[in-house]
Length: 352
Image 1 (cartoon, rainbow, N blue to C red):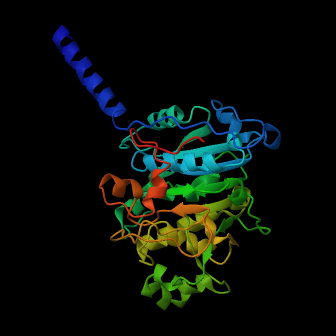
Image 2: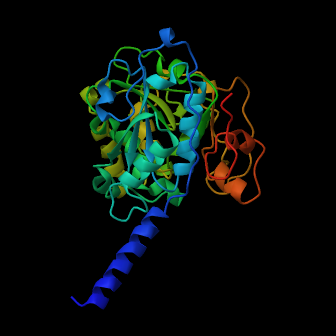
Image 3: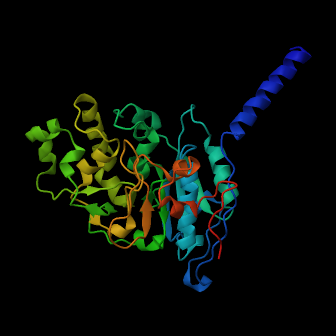
């Protein structure tokens, strides 16, 4: 190879590396929180050891997805968890990232970004091993963002996380907590119940499925004998040992495969969860999912809180607070989310 050709190749490589590293914005380092006396908490988890996931000192396990599109939300959510946790040093985060070659950021780039902002955080990043399989099962929904395979990773936590992890709190990336996550993680589960989440029995449950679904006695009988209520899958407590024993992932996939042949719902990953679990979950107080703050899935209009206490705010729906803030058109509650925004040079929450 000639010297000029070699120089050109090096320039192309350097440009590609620079583009890759520039794909992710820069985030500030978060404050380090010690919110309780050391004697009241388990020993701190080592931040650089992935095996700490199996440590008996892991007081709470949290699972979230991790990708470039929603990274800003994930960083804010993590900060809010640590800010309000009684024992933040004893929380282990499990992040599931895309394994597709077309991803805008690699798992290692995402891991490095999280580590830079949270140097003492105990966490592990898992490539979504079932991504290609899930992509073949997804049917188009009413909003393109709901069709990303990573949006279905919550159905595969039992096979993605280590077997030693029995109970995990799953959080979407568009939430902030204002309360101690340990209280949510300790939600009582009845025997053989694998999912806990706030239920909303006043919602129009029939709207989550097509008229053809309800017109078919064979299909609609799936809810026979159950008091099926809507619940939001963006905030859940999961017993993964019970999930594995019952084979719930396979049951969810069966409904997704049917949806490919017969249109029975319109809304992404939620309906398969409802088909398997609605009426079979442990109820959680509504304060743990003040959802819908992103508006509907079409326009994303501003919405306020529903009545009651608030432990978790959830910007489910089309409108995301970071997008509205950047556009200069925030909703009133977006100011709450902005306190946890770590994006440079935005101001974040204070350590005091």
